[in-house]
Length: 317
Image (cartoon, rainbow, N blue to C red; front, side):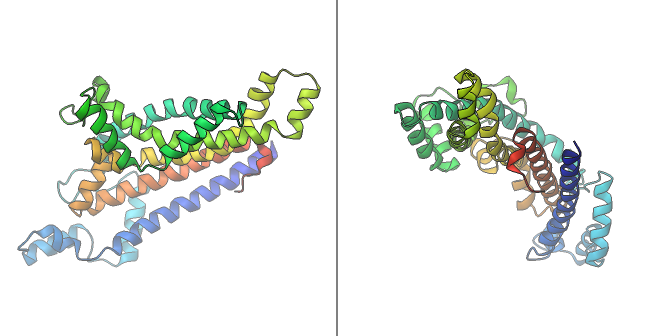
């Protein structure tokens, strides 16, 4: 137990350092953006007084270290600032965009875990057989297709040619759950590559685990093959895939910008694109910080799960 507590403590300290690094990096990157944000927001024929007022609102007239300290202190209190374009709190934009993105991410993960693990176990169980070769060939081929191209292909076939599904989510508003047909194609695009990668990771882990000495010893003891496969080999095979699953969930929650843009879904990715085009720096900074924190938290959780499933892997903190 002391070893687990030490591991958790080290990972929490590392997570705190990573969070501070995310805040510093986001601030530094927005500072390095070319041009003057105040001039860009003032319009085509900027008024010097308006530019000065915008600079005062954005605190651009203060030294960078002072602005960083003020912004970081506000973040600690949950204050992400206000939009320069509308004056609304940034948290309002986050709340509006989180619903559609979270819905897509949840549906994808719910389908991803059984599909990816099931295909990996099936391929490993029939290693070298027709099922293994078919699954390996299909997953490799699908993984090689970019999300945008795969999405365009699905839209062309199932929406334009067959007219089975709507091509976009336009007209459905934010209540996408009430229109499940509009979710089929986006979720299929989001599932395609993660299912391929996770199934291949699980297959490789299962093959190694079933060929390991402890699996051979379990067979000598007369333990049923199904119990060896599911109770002994699978936890060690799933451990490496857990790290990839965390990165996949991070990718999903960070907006899936390409998929949301392709299917016109009003999620966090769309909010980020609109904020970048309007040079709304507080919204961009707030979204970037949230995405970075999601990455830190998910990686921390993945390390803890991996350590719990397969302590011998020795996940470094």
